[in-house]
Length: 328
Image 1: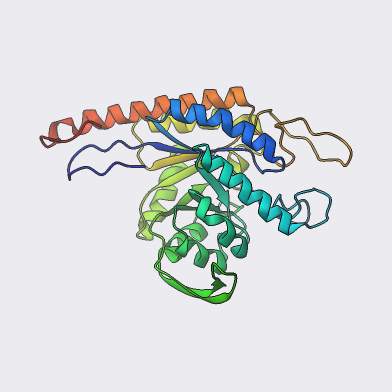
Image 2 (image 1 turned 45 degrees about the vertical axis):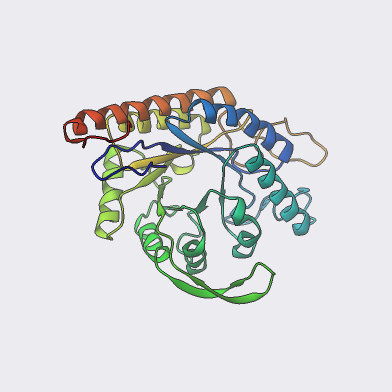
């Protein structure tokens, strides 16, 4: 998020933080989480643009629960109609309380029912190479992050960003539910998400390598770093030291890091869903998440790092600021 100032003026640049549960299985818990998060969002709004995760679709390597959208009762009943209603109702309530929403798009059809309530979208590591998802991203009215592949390949993501920035025509669904030719203008706000792979890629050398690939492709060097998944070694607690490393880079003036992704919930960890057995309120049934206390500490650390980056930028540019520029 950047204010528009006259040429040569300093800009107040916020760090985007996409934070929240790995997936939504309990809308009541999602609202309780967002109720806490919106207060932190308001408190840190001078440094961070905090957006909550509301992920309704889960990609699966083989089988497993595919998310609220497909199985809201978690009983293999496949009540997709109920899942779509539940997902959209939650998005309406989240945005109504002043909480912007991020989600991952798997079904191009479902996107037409949800996209008007979304502020940031992700195309996951398993679908970044998909032409269908690149076409979808080219017409969505908000920034889209393409993740590197599960093995850490960044080339696939840079190709996706390039493709999604271009106009496309494809078979899609209209607002009235009819199949039609969809024409897009291209999405200029697509960017890379580093999520790790065979090895982590959140460190400074990995960032430089990835930005080099973006530059070689003629793309803007702007990167969001996912503190979970391959970068955490699939250990949710490692998100804290990963975010410390990211924050250190930001505080030293690194401008190519534009955001961070964090998997977080009211309660730390995860629990398998078992029929007839209660899941603790606010605990994940998919990937393990940071608990609330650690989440607030990480957000505060990122806010301080963003403030430090701005001061570093001011020291470098202060002698060249034109008269009449608004304060950063």
